[in-house]
Amino acid sequence: DPTRAVFTLYCFFQIAHSFQGFYKSCVAHNPVLNMLAMHEISDIADWTIVEGTGKDGDWTKSLTEEQRNQMFESSPIAHVEKVVTPYLLLIGEKDLRVVPHYRAFIRNLLARGIPCKVLMYPDSCHPIDEVDADADASINIIRWFQKSFK
Image: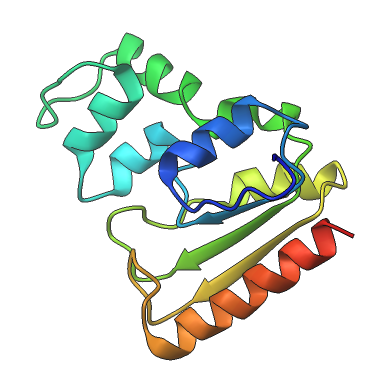
C-alpha cells in the first residue's frame, strides 16, 4: 500500500524519486541527493563511483566527463523538477558518509510549493542514534506521516 509504506533506506529514496505520485509522503534519513557532489565531499568516494556509474573506478583519479554525467543523472537532484511527493529530510550534521548537501533539492521543492521540511541534528553522524535525536526524529516522522495521510 503506497499510502502506508515507511522506509528509511537509500534504495527507497531512489525509488521514491523515480515513481512520482505513487507514494503520499517520504522521509529520507541523510539522503544521497547528488552523487556527483557527494563524490567530492564524502569519505566514501569509491562507493559513489560504483553507485553513480554502475562500474568500479579509481577514486584516486579525477572523474571523466562521462563519469560526472552518469553520476549526476543517477541522482535525485537531476530529476527534482518531477518531484511531487512531500519530503521530510533528517540530517546528521557530523555525517562524513553522506555529508549534508540537501539545499539545492529543498530549494527546488520550496520554489514549486511542494511540502518539505529539514530537521538538523548537530551532534549526529550518519546514524541519528543519540537518544534525544532519535526520539525527536521518531516523533517528527510520526507527525509528518499523520499530516500527510489526512
